[in-house]
Length: 199
Image (tube, rainbow, N blue to C red; front, top):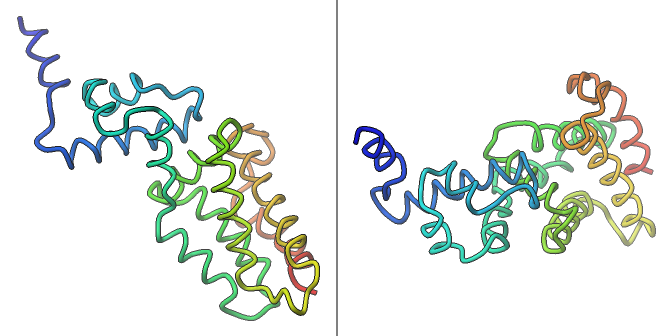
C-alpha cells in the first residue's frame, strides 16, 4: 500500500500544463544532450520528468516533435555569437574559440540545447540543417563578403574545426582533448582560427 502511494506521488499529474510541459522539455533536453536522438525514448523522458508517457504525447505527439521543441537555441547563445565581431580584429580568433567553448560547455541552459542539436545532427536532417545554419551564419554575420570572395569557405572551415573539437570532447571523448582546459585550447586554436577568418 505504501509502495503504491509513493508511485502515485512520483508519477502523478503536476500542478498545471505549463509546469508539466516545462518539466518534460527539461528532461528531454538533458536526455538528448546525453544520449542523442536514437538513445532517447519518450518513455525515458517521461520517467525523468516524473510524468506519464501519455502526458508527453499529449504535448508533443512524437519524439521528432519533442526534439524540434528542444532544439530552440537560447537567446543568450545567440547574443554570445552575435557579439563576436565587436572588438579588434587581432583578437577575433580568441573571441570565437572562447564563445564556442563557453556555449557548448558553459551553463546548461545554453549547452544542453546545443549538445542535443549536435548529437541529433548525426541522425536527424532537421537538426543537421539547423545546426549548420546556426554555426555558419554566426561567423558569417561579421564578414564582408564583398571584400572577401571566399568568406563562406573560410567561415565553414573555421566552424568545422571548432565543432570537431566539441565532438572530440563531448561526443567521442578523445582523452587528451577532454583533459585540456579552455585556456589551453584557446591558446592553441585561436591563432589557427584567426588566420582563417582574418586576411
